[in-house]
Image (cartoon, rainbow, N blue to C red; front, side):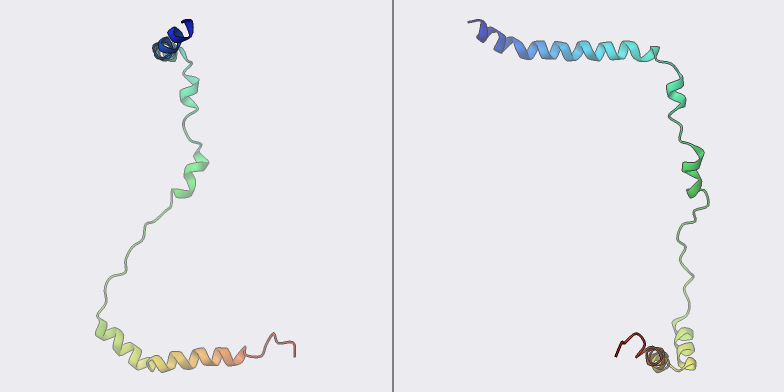
Length: 98
């Protein structure tokens, strides 16, 4: 019989303990020293890396016709192909141990 009583009495007892601990915490929180509040400020070194940060800025749009004319004056895509092949020919057989 006693076991049945404690089984039904336990949830209200736990709730009462919760509220008592919450009141205890709230009662003591204004009495804590103000030094703990001063410790919460981050050190200056932690803020320094972001002081000179600059966000991404898009370049202004240019006329696509002018860009196409410039590529044509350079020699088009074939010029870029030749440049890449010349770089590959220079380093083609380096590093082989044959």
